[in-house]
Length: 102
Image (cartoon, rainbow, N blue to C red; front, side, top):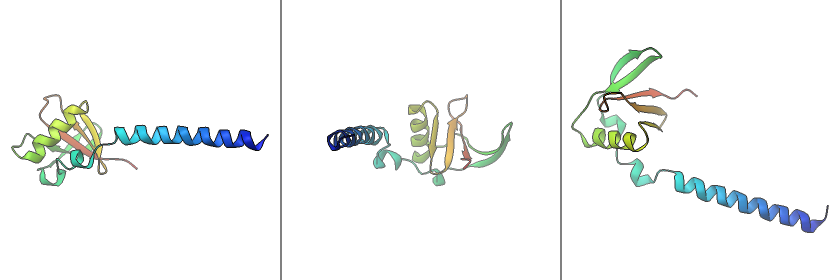
């Protein structure tokens, strides 16, 4: 194997890594988008479902709840954020959340 071949291989790998990083940066939520809602300002109630315990938030008039609901709707009803998985119930106005399993 020649040095020239290894240099070209390295350069190609760098280009691939750069392209992947650029794509991931475009897909990541912007800080301002992420800060539009704070789940700690939403009233959560403990509930039990077929898959175990979770927390539930019924419709609320706060900006945090409204922004969270809008964010969930923009992401097909499901979002993982800050160690929690959030989803919208079938009524399209109630939100559930459960700690992510790690």
